[in-house]
Image 1 (cartoon, rainbow, N blue to C red):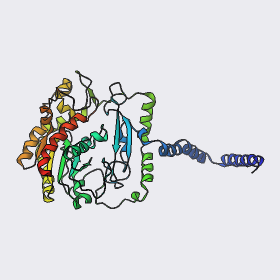
Image 2: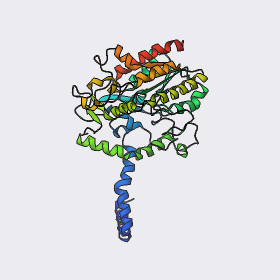
Image 3: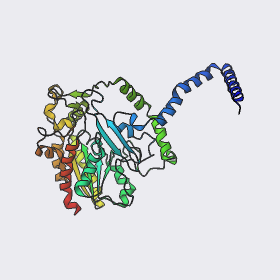
Image 4: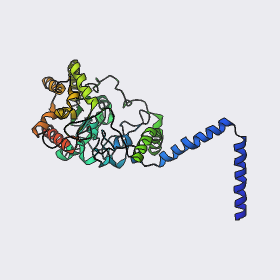
Length: 390
């Protein structure tokens, strides 16, 4: 086409567009302007912007916000993400210790390296964010360290309620040899749901199929990225300004640059005001133990202390006022043992390793344990499991 014809075509198109704008109503113009300035850029940007830009740590980047039932686990499936991650209590402050982190997720949306579908799993670890390995690279999370120490396939089933695991067809058909169940002291009581009672959060494993799953996986993730507008906007603002003020829930030690989470202290106080939680927790964990025994699966409950419990003396005195030293696990674990449930107390493991005076087992600016804490825990767990795996 000659250049003159191209120029005339462009001019004609411009005249048509101007005529459309003149003939449009005020509401039509407002809607068009709104879509042009908000929705369209959001669609384009969120389909193009890399995942690692969405938040300061991998947890929020990888969390799957699609409708319940789109995937069993919490994370985008079949992903590999590498990111410079910041501490969860003090992100982008002078106290943060950025670290390079790699995440792998499997086809089910759990934090595991992909493995052949027919490979048997000997050990399943069920629990909370410590089991997921928040703040740690893939090589350092508990399931991977435990697998190297035992030489047996280990699967991280977290975060998850125990009922979800019991219902999971994968492990009904091919049960593991051992289930390790571990929650931090701050959440063990309220996160335990009796079997047979609907658990909150994600959809039940055996529930009806979700139409959302008919979309290709990439299309599902693309739409989910659009739902993450608050994550993206807040993170970009903090990246640009370089500022992230400490929240009201963050407590700094008077003796060091160690930070604590105020909600964990509130949980300690709650447990001390509700001693009835001990007996209820024993009943529920006994139920879990019995369910595994019926399948021929060994069960180990691992008591995992929160940071405030391990470093109690470093919590500022004004925040300890009215509280006695944490004793929930001190009461719970002996009762479980008396009920025939095998247990492991990580507080004792840490004490024997010289904690809290020795090498740190938690990140200074993070609520979660560090690689040294994981190695100590994995070694103790491996020693307990050895007779069951022979």
